[in-house]
Structure formats: C-alpha cells, structure tokens
Length: 404
Figure 1 (cartoon, helix red, strand yellow):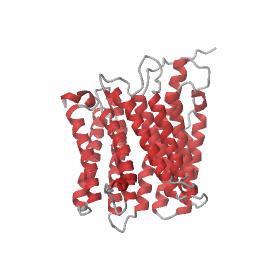
Figure 2: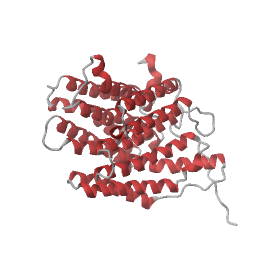
Figure 3: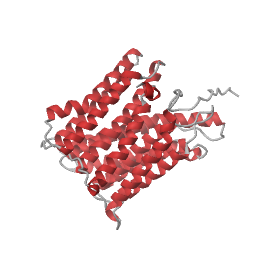
Figure 4: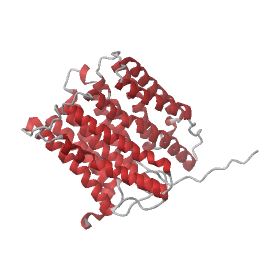
C-alpha cells in the first residue's frame, strides 16, 4: 500500500478510477469477448450481466466515491482513507469477481452470491451512517438508507435474473436506472444552481443568478417515485405519463438555472448539459413505454444511463481532476473529449433500432474510447497531495446588497 499511498487519501481516487476501468473493461468484454474466443459472463443472458455491471458495478463505485468524499464536509474532518478505504475497495472487487464467476460458471447458490454482491453496500452504508451520527446531522442518514435500498435492488435483480418468478427482470432494471435518476435529480438539483451562483459571483459576470425551483424539484421527485411505483404495479400507461411529466419538470428547472450563461465555464456548462440528458431521457423513456416512438424502452433508457448517469460521473470526476490555480475550476482537454465520446455513444445506442449499421457495436467502441481518454487525463491527477474542496473551486465572497 505504501507504494500507492497517494491513491488512498480520499474515496474518490480509487473508486472513480475503478468505475472508469470497469466501464471500459466490462463493455468491451460484453460486446467483443465472443469475437476473440473469450467467454462472456451471463446472468441468464449476457445483456443482463452487462446491465447489472453498469448499474451495480460502475454505478456503485461512483456512488461510493461521491458520497464518502462529500461526507467529509459534514463535520469538516479528514475523508475516509488508508486501510478502511482499502477494505471497502476490496469488497467492491470481491463483488465484481463473484458476478464474473457466476456469469461464467452459473452454479453459485444465491445464499453465497448475495453476501458477496452486497457486502460493499453494507460497509458503505455503515460508513455513511457513522459520519451522519458523529456529525450530528441525522438528516444525512438518508444517504445510508439510499445505499441500503440500492443493495436490496441488487439482490432482487440477481434473484430475478437467476430464475425467480418474482420480481421480473424488467422491473428490476427499471428500479436500477431510476435509482440514479432520483439521485441525480436530488444531488445535481442542488449542485448546479449552487455552483452556477458561485461562478457568477466569483467572476463578477453581469448576468442574473439561477432562480430557486423548490416546487418543480419536489414535483419532479414525486413523479419519479410515482412512476416507479406504478411500474411495479403494472400500470404501464400511467407510469409512462408520470415519467414524461417528471422529464418536463426537470427541463423547466434547467431553464430557471440559465445554463446558457455559463459558456465561459465548460465544466459548469457540461454539468447543465448532463441534467438536460436526464430531462430528455425521462421523456424519451415515457414515450417509448407508451409505444409512441420507434424504439423500445430498453433502448431509450440509455439516454438516462449513458447520457445522464455517465455524464454525472464524468462531471464529478472532472471537477476532482481539474487544475487548481485559485480561480474557477477548468476542464482538462481529455475530460472534454471523454464527454463528447460518451454522449456520441449514447446517441448511437439510442438510435440502434432505426439505423442501417451495427450501432450497438459502434456505441460500445465510442464508450470504451471515452473511458480510455478519461483515464489518460484522470490517472495523473490522483498522485500527490489531496486538493480541497474536491468537487468545487474557491467560494466567492458573499455579496451583501445595501438598501438604496
């Protein structure tokens, strides 16, 4: 560990690194493994293994990297580091190995697979709960609760994929991607206007600050939960309407944040664009579920997973890796290229059913290139001392308006 001690200074360093590596390896393995005589893991099908590893592999590493790094601000202490962080990373690796073994040799019993798969989530939830209690910020226990719900969703996904009649796999795929839609709605919904306001004040750009959108935010969140519940109840049409409504509410929030004013800060502009993918993806999935567009719901959901979820991961990691010179955070060229390639991959995957070429393979190549480029830019930045704050630049001084 001493040789790589810099890697264990904060949770985002190893976990964002592993998220990117797995995003690259798992997709190449799933799409092209058979072409080079490499057996592709399956959870009943190779597609279900692929979906599991994107949601509960890539996604869980990113969730842990962000939540634990953000938790250091709850009480102003040092972030999780050293052996405890290495233990958490080890549990994530055990889960990936367990799912590969199950995928290649499908004889591992669920009673053995489940503990290996969810141990990472249980430790992550315990660490977050500890930080919430120690900092006396009990409202933050919701982070730990969300992680436990995600662990339950994974257990049900595995149960469905490996032959149980209830729940069905389609329902659990929905639960997986909607977890991220809800989290992005909450986290980015607070982060984007705050970061935008800070940048406007710091640069003294003469533009209006973002407007608060509490009603739209709560409405969008309520519609997302409603869509999830209705989907489990089998009310396809009504759940589709709820998704469309949630997407339109998110789009309205975005207009009030005035992202077009952020052209001078590409990192911030890309964060706004990521939220735009969420709004677009929710509407598209709703329309696909209703049969109103010539693509399936499984195709449409990639607007949320590849567009919004991956965009959010890239946004956070790009901010953590941004150069620090005392001013607003600046995007590295490799990160900008990664965004472009991921979103091109998302477009290709969404359009796969309606184009004349193998757009799924093209999307896989673009996706893999995106994460390879990201790693080229990210790996050098996780060496040396930890830069704080991790996800934001210096705060602008509070402006007090005197009465005229």
